[in-house]
Length: 162
Image (cartoon, rainbow, N blue to C red; front, side, top):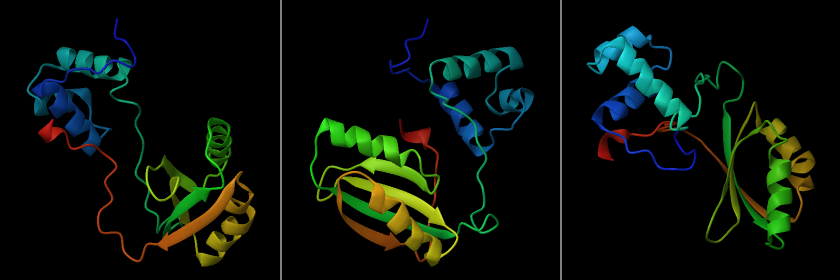
């Protein structure tokens, strides 16, 4: 049995499997097995082991923001009035209720959280600022960074160097 929080040691084949699945999660097991030089059954067993150990946490589609009318990408630095476990938990619970917030990271440094959001336009962002972010508990200060050009957007891990 694989412990859920235990780090799984990955060999070269595991890394190649993960790299191929990150490039195309819809690849067939037969094609995947060819690309990693395994027969289909052991390849599938490795994938299942990686899923069970939660190394593979899920599969999802990459959606084009322009075609879904969410091309305005915004990062917001959030500073809280006070910082304690209760405030952190309340903030985290509320953040999860907003679909506009794609990512939320607690940051060590000059502010408390960094949010990544997408909107259709500046007006939708402005409405969120007043009706969404402004209602979150203990928010004392925000700084917004509007992205003018996305240079690189990678949502996968490069496993070649581990």
